[in-house]
Figure 1 (spheres, rainbow, N blue to C red):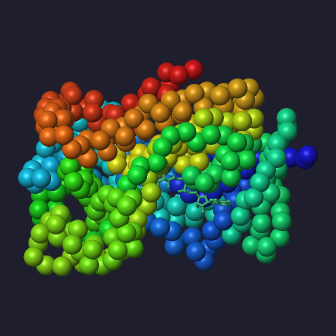
Figure 2 (cartoon, rainbow, N blue to C red; figure 1 turned 135 degrees about the vertical axis):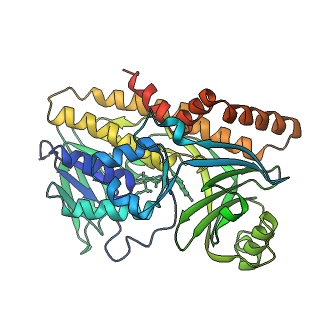
Figure 3 (tube, rainbow, N blue to C red; figure 1 turned 180 degrees about the vertical axis):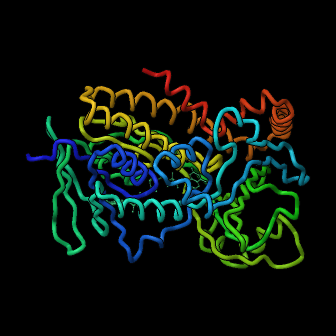
Length: 406
Ligand SMILES: Cc1cc2nc3c(=O)[nH]c(=O)nc-3n(C[C@H](O)[C@H](O)[C@H](O)COP(=O)(O)OP(=O)(O)OC[C@H]3O[C@@H](n4cnc5c(N)ncnc54)[C@H](O)[C@@H]3O)c2cc1C
C-alpha cells in the first residue's frame, strides 16, 4: 500500500468535513475531500440545522468562516420557553450573560446550506485541499502506515486516494462506521418531526428568534430562519401511526398552524418536510487510522440545536490532534483522547440535553409539567443560575469539561 505520509482523507463535505478540511489545511496538512454531491446539486439539500452556538462561532472565526456567515445570518441573543396550553411565556434566556465567557454572546441563525456553500467556496480556493466533488466514496482499507479510500469519480470510474488517516464525516449513514462494524447505540423516537417553513413574522406575537414550546398534545419549536423576507420554521410531532402523506398535505399543514396560532388568515407556507429522529452514539469513534466525526459518530433530536454544533466541535478537536500527530510528531494515541473527549460530550451533554429537552416539551403529567416550568422560570430569573444554564445549552460547558479529560 502506498500512501502520502501526512495527507488526511475526509469523506463528506457537510459542515463537519468542510470545517475539518479547512482547519487542517490552515495548518499545512494536505487534505483530499471526497463529496458525493457536485456543483450541479450541492445547493439542493434538504433544510436542516440552522442555529450556531457561540463556541461554534469562535471556531468558524478561526478559519475565516464567521465573517462570511454573519452577513447571511440573524444574530439572536435571546431564546424563549413557552407553554402552548395558555400561550404563556415561561422563561427568557439572554446570551448577554455569557459576555465574559465568549466573544460571541449570541447564536447566529444561519442555515446549514449557507455554511456549506461558503465553506465549500473556501475549500475550492485552498491549494492544500484536493476537492473531489461528484465522487461517491465506496470503501477503504488500512494498514499500519496508511489508508486507501476507494471512490467512483464523476466519469463513473473507480479511483483511489491514499493518506495517513481517513475521517468519516459522511453523516449518519457512514459507510466507514458500518465497514468497521461499529455499533450505533441508542434509540429512534416513535414519533416523527414535521418541519413547516412559513413566510410570516412571529415576533409580532411576542416570540423571540428561537422558541421552545411545551404542550402535552403537540409540542413545537419555532425559529426565525432567515430574512428579510422573513422565513420561520415550526416543528410539530407526527405520530408514527398517522398517515404521513396526509400529514404533509397543504390543508393539514395549514390546520396545524392555525391551531398553533389562530390569525384568521392563511399562513403563507413555503415548504415542509418530515423526518425521523434518532438518539445514537457510535460505540467507538476511532479504529486504527479511521476516525468518525459529526453525524457519523452521533445523532440527536434537533431540540436544542446541538447536532451540527457538536459535530463542528468534533472537527476542531480532531484537527488539533491530527496536526500534532502529522506535524508535531506526537503519538497517535492522542486520537484515543479525541474519542474519550468527544464520546463523553456526545453522551453526557448532547444526548442527555436533547432527550431532556424533548421530555420537557412533551411532558403530559400536569404536576411534572408545572414543576419543570417553575424550575425553568426560577433559573431564568436568577442571573447566576441562568448563566450556568446558558453555558450548558450553548455547549461551552461541554468543551470545558472535555478539556479536563486526558
Ligand atoms: C430537520 C433538522 C434540523 C436540524 N437542526 C439543527 C440545528 O438547528 N442545529 C444543529 O446543531 N443541528 C441541527 N440538525 C442536525 C444537523 O443537520 C447535523 O448534525 C449536521 O448536518 C451534521 O453534519 P455532518 O457534516 O456530520 O453531516 P451531513 O451534514 O450529513 O453531511 C454529510 C456529507 O457527506 C456526504 N456524503 C454522504 N455519503 C457520502 C459518500 N458515500 N461519498 C461521498 N460523500 C458522501 C453528503 O452528501 C453530505 O454532504 C438538524 C437536523 C435535521 C434533520
